[in-house]
Amino acid sequence: MNKYRLLILLPTIFLYGCDAVVDKFYDTYETPYKAAYKESFIRSCTEHDSSEQAKAICSCMVDDLLTNYPASELNDQDRIRKRIQEVLIKQCKESQSD
Figure 1 (tube, rainbow, N blue to C red):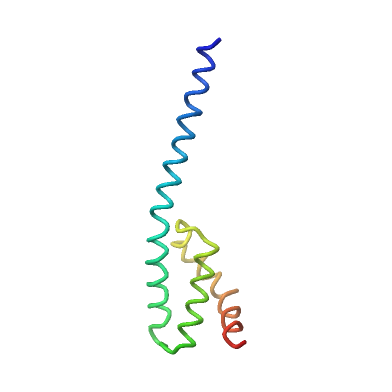
Figure 2: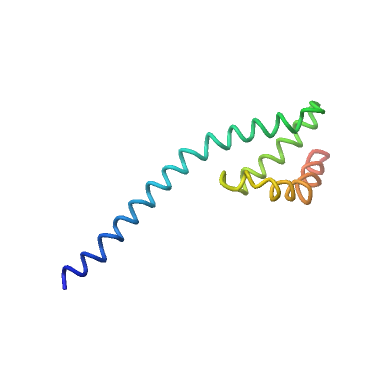
């Protein structure tokens, strides 16, 4: 009976260990990726209008994206574009006019 417990317990321990490795990988990857994403987003967003108001609106939008999406979803351009067009432009313009 103890052999069977061990056979069940070992994969469970192994999988638990893998979760920790995966979490560590994402923590290590996500922070620099999001920093680079923010810099690139603001640069692209303010390419044709570099006024302080445009920078503030772009910063508002990217901060929302970085708060609400993991790095793995930020490359889904259709989803991000939809969020920007349907929610963030209006929301961030209103927050800058207050």
